[in-house]
Image 1 (spheres, rainbow, N blue to C red):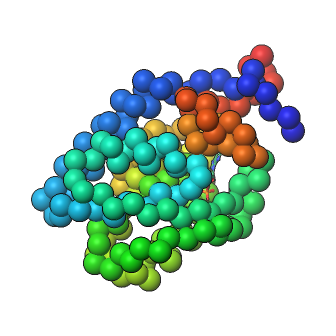
Image 2 (image 1 turned 45 degrees about the horizontal axis):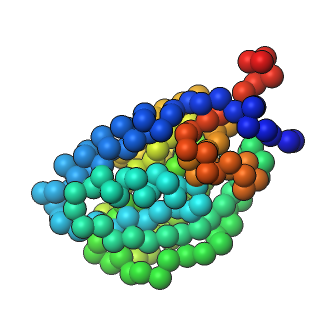
Length: 180
Ligand code: IMP
Ligand code: MG
């Protein structure tokens, strides 16, 4: 399938993303501030790159960064198989870990990553996700959730279709044919 920019509608523009992520940063700061003064944030590449960078700028605590690169999507669907492209080197024993993900759809990606993160024996793991798709019962407890949406294929603000459209500054979705 060939997707062109004209096929994409804006779901959340730059201002609403910035506003929402600022609120999430405050909520996260308030949650941790009596527990610790440093958290270890793990960014799930590539899709979370912009969400992660905006979120950590809005957290008023020290934040250690780690990056893991995994993929599961091909075209507009999850393949159901997770590929690890690269993994972090930092240790996180006894740390307060915040796993930062762009979209939770089937929940497979996060389940997979969580299984590995637990082996580091962190003190605690919480999840922040910009978008939760309410299509599947993904079975993941998202502690800090930005937006909940129905079944749409999202693009932009880090999210891709076969590696394209990540650099759109807004979060868009693919129009259905009937939407003209
Ligand atoms: P899950 O494993 O099914 O929960 O899917 C999560 C992963 O697939 C996320 O890390 C996203 O990067 C990617 N993904 C999920 N939904 C979309 C979408 O609508 N557009 C682009 N990528 C998506
Ligand atoms: Mg992702």
